[in-house]
Length: 226
Image (tube, rainbow, N blue to C red):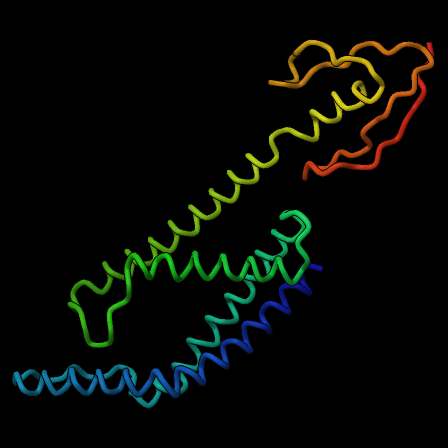
């Protein structure tokens, strides 16, 4: 199951990467080329010698662009599949499509929107070359912090939503349905009462769940004999 999800996620990333490549080639590369020409003209006007190109612009705008975008997209497709597998079935009654939409939106906001709003990227040929490494580390550190905070917030929300309801129902509900008051507070935790003795022959409803989502489960009954 996990292998199938991973393959499908990577294939989805491949398709998205090809679409992103077409968009970048049509709308992105002309702006990057114009910025590089502007930078080169400024250096020539100041009498500076242009730095030699380690990789030609022809390679950068074709093979280099395709490799970077497609590999990036396939990787994120695989990560999305893993996130979906960990999330599906743990967010109430969301369908697979709704879960995928929530995971995709959460990933987009966490890994791109929040870091971009706090620390937007510089346009091409703008910025001090001496601070490239520092700015790169700072940006990816902000991305990691955003992801960590999102995971912590999700875990805290799930823990607060659980609230110990399944266990409390399992202890108190049978006695309420049978007409017996629950016993005094004991070591099970705040607000959880221990079961009092039942009279012989009484039929007591029993919570047959054991689930973690706190939703009501079908009730069964048993007869308590002396």
